[in-house]
Image 1 (cartoon, rainbow, N blue to C red):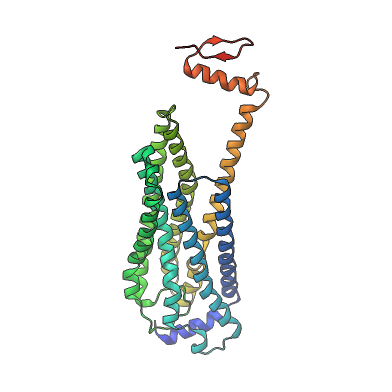
Image 2 (cartoon, rainbow, N blue to C red):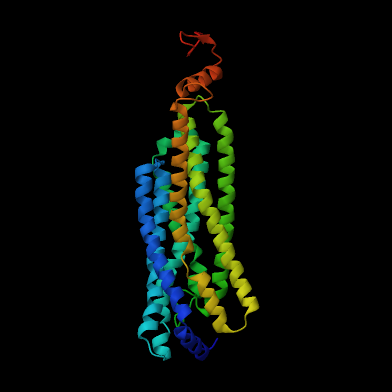
Length: 345
């Protein structure tokens, strides 16, 4: 696309009230992402007890989500500033390629980092399940290694995209890659989609194996605690990972559909901005985890309430609990009042 065509599209977008409203909504969503990230950080420090490695990786995810929201909000703010104060000249409506690359590349690194962090947490739980109770002797070393590896791999993964970018071309919207990097950007999206699929599969396998192992670890307290922790982490992260996969699948499908249906460059960019520069995931990620934490807390409270309630199948709740333990241990000697007493071995 020639720079003249770029300029004509920039003028059309600048005159579009709906386009400006979309940028405003996306900017507000970025701010909301930051607020929710800090709220989630407070929630799991006060209400959730994870292994240090899980906590470190989740904190890395939150940091990436916050940086993503900050860098994305910066170029969304530029779009609004251009709409408010720019005239209809190309120099004022279009953005410097170097500046756009400086803002866009950290955003892309954060997107890749979030996807890889999900996989890292799944891998961490695989390692914990494989090693067993001795895993606690490693302290937070594995978490530190995985966190650093996630950031490094994110930068390396974006290497081909960064190498193909050009700073000479002025940009209509800093959220979009330059024309020269479009192919590499598309390949990156497919790679991240594949990593999402892998993460979902690993979480499902870990969940299934942990449920199976839990039945055989009835009287191994430390092992059972670790298995329950893995199940809890999986219940938190599996929905998040699956939602990210859905969002990326929708994004890829929408871009293909838009470019197949529409021929006008203005219409293509107009519709792509709805999907491409919206921080859907960084808002949904903390919201989903906060909701799951609330649900799991509620389920635990209901179990405790049933355990100590006045009646369970016509018996006091505590008696029902101890009689179930009696049956589990195979004891049958009653004590005065009908409550169970273990038979000496």
